[in-house]
Image (cartoon, rainbow, N blue to C red; front, side, top):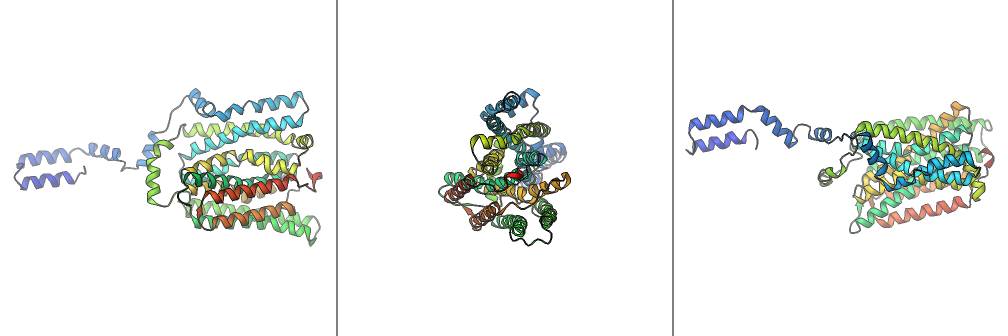
Amino acid sequence: MGCCKVPALIQAQVEMGLVNDVEHKSLFRRETDSPQRKASSLMEQGSLSASFRERATKTPMNSVLQSFKIVILSNKLNLLLPFGPLAILLHYLTDNKGWIFLLSLVGITPLAERLGYATEQLACYTGSTVGGLLNATFGNVTELIISIFALKNGMIRVVQLTLLGSILSNMLLVLGCAFFCGGLVFSQKEQVFDKGNAVVNSGLLLMAVMGLLFPAVLHYTHSEVHAGSSELALSRFSSCIMLVAYAAYLFFQLKSQPSSYTPLTEETNQNEEASDDDEDPEISKWEAIIWLSILTAWVSLLSGYLVDAIEGASVSWKIPISFISVILLPIVGNAAEHAGAIMFAMKDKLDLSLGVAIGSSIQISMFAVPFCVVIGWMMGAQMDLNFQLFETAALFITVIVVAFFLQEGTSNYFKGLMLILCYLIVAASFFVHEDPHQDDI
C-alpha cells in the first residue's frame, strides 16, 4: 500500500468519527516515521531499478566443479568432445588426412555450440542489444579462426569459400530452419518481425554483394588499368569502406536503435517478464568470459589440424574442396547460430532469430571478409574480394531470394521450407562444381 493512501484513509475515518485524534496521530506517526520500511517495500516491489537488482541477486556463485558440470556435463552433444584430442593423436600417428579432418570437424561441433551457450550466458548481463551482437560475433569465431589459419598457410581460396559458405548457410539453412520450426509450433498464425529492420539488413547484404561483385566483374571483363594489381587495390579499398560501414552499423544498432533486438509490443514484453525465471543465467559473468576464452583457444587449436587436413580429405574422399569449404565447414561453425535461431523462433521471438541469422551474415560479409583482406594485406598475401564468377552469382541470387522472403515482415513454415530447399540446391551445385583455381589452395 502506498505511503499517501494510508493517511488519506485514516483522515476519512477521523471525519466519520471512527477513530479519535490521538489514534490518528499515532497511526500517522507509524506511517511517516519508517522510511527504511518504505524503501525496503519499494525495493521488494521493484520500483528502484528492479531489473538491475534482480539480475544482481540472481547472479549464480558456482564453484569450479559446479561450473564444469553446468557447461560441459549438462549437454549430451559434449559426448563428441573426445574426438578433438583423438584427431590430434591421429595426426601424429597416421597420415590419413580424411580421418583427421572428420574427427577434427566432429570435435569442433560441440565447441561451437558451447561458444553459443557461453555467449548467451554473458548476454544475460549485457542487455538484449549487446547480447544479440555478442551472439552473432562469437557465433562466427569458429569460421574466423579457421580463415586466419588458412590464410596463414596461403590457402586463399579456402578462406574465400569458407566465409562465403557461412553467409549462405546463415541466410538459407539457419534462417530457413528457424522459420520452419517456428511456423510448425505456431501453425495457427503467421509470425511477425520488424519489417523496417529486415529491410536495413537486406540493404547491407546487397552492399556486401556490391563489394564482392565489382572485383569479379573487373577481372572477367579484362578491363583493369593494371592487370592483376588493380583488382587487388580495388579489393583493399572496398574492404576499408566495408569496415567503416560495419562500424557505422554497430553504432546505429547500439546508439540510435537500442530496441532493435527487443520485441516491440507490450504483450510480448509481458510474456518476457513472465518467463524471466526460465532465462536466468546459470553461470556468472566472469565464468562466462573464462569459458569463452577456453573454448576459443580449443577451437583455435583444432582449427589448425582441420585446415591442414582439408586438401588430403578432398583427395581421399573424392569430394571437391569447394564443397568441403562452402558446405561442411560452415554447418559445423554455425552450430551455435542454428540452435539459437531455432530456439528463439519456437518461443515466438522472431526478431531475435533474424538478429542471429541475418546479423551473423552481415557480420561475416561486412566485417570478417574485409578483415581477412586487410590481414592478408599485412601478411603479404594476395587475398582479394574476387570470389570468382560462380560463387559471386550464388551469393547474389541468395541475397535477392532472402530479401524477397523478408519484405512482408511475416514468416511461416512454408517460407522456411523454401529456404531450406534453396540451400539444398546450392549444396548440390557446389558438389558438382570444380574450382578452376585449385593451384591457389
